[in-house]
Amino acid sequence: MHRTYSLRSSKAPTAAQLQSPPPPPSTTKSKFFGKGGIASSFRKTVAGNTGPELSRKLSAYIKLEKNVMRAIELTARERRDVAKQLSAWGEDNDSDVSDVTDKLGVLLYEIGELEDQYIDKYDQYRITLKTIRNIEASVQPSRDKKQKITDEIALLKYKDPQSPKIPVLEQELVRAEAESLVAEAQLSNITREQLKAAFNYQFDATRELAEKYALIAGYGKALLELLDDTAVTPGETRPAYDGYEASKQIIIDAENALAAWTLDAAAVKPTLSLHQEYDDEEPVDGEIEEAAEEEFAKHDDEEVVVSK
Image (cartoon, rainbow, N blue to C red; front, side, top):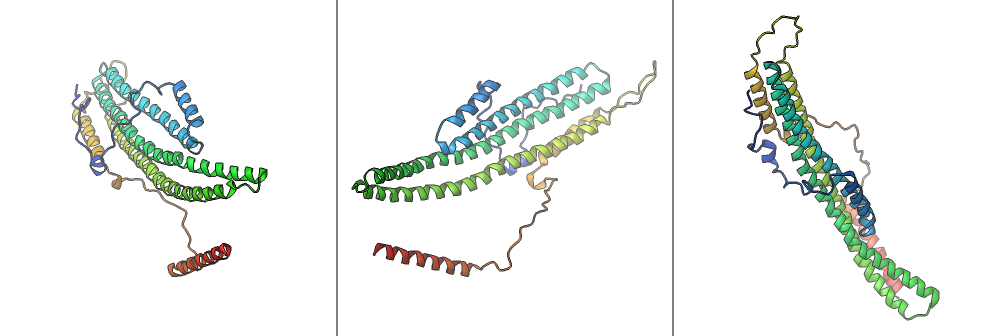
């Protein structure tokens, strides 16, 4: 049997890996919790009901994505087992079926390997989303503080409008609002930055996996062409199989194609039908700055009037 490429313990880095080094192994792999439906449901429920209110929805989302990763990990493992079993079944068949199924097993095993690599890249997407979740959790205390002071002021004005504590609390509210403005601005900026980064990780990884799926499917169909499916009559002898070198070359070509693939060489390009339209009378930068200065001047004048 030609099993030179059946089980590869180590491989040279591919062009895609050299262009963008792979992330560290996923932190969700090979853990006890999370493999079953009960544990997955438990994690989702806990994430959605604990922690700061602001970050609960994103926490639940990240936990659900962890369940997705578990499912992909299981699929990748089962895929490799399937590949081995296909080769084992074909070994006892005629020479052409034996050789082709062995090589098909190589391709199926490679799909499992690619899915395993996809998990590591998918984990980078989850880790990046956690940055937003952590910022949301850090912003919650400033919101709570501002709301608490606002409620105390409202309560005092209702019970004792002349209370000397009211001016003190109002000063605290001004400081709390200033702190909250800084925190909210940070949340706004980081949310957009990290959301783009996270989904770029996911979509790049998905694109790579999909295009490599397509490559493997193409070479798999080439292997099938080596099978002579011409019907034979009882007692007729099928021509001797002579596709060993061809099947081996197909596997070599498949490996070379997968190793040489890079994101820049992606075959599928999106075609967008939407085009952003710009207003012909859009103000230039100088006009924008002038308008802003006028607005600030008005604001300063209002503050002077109030202070008098």
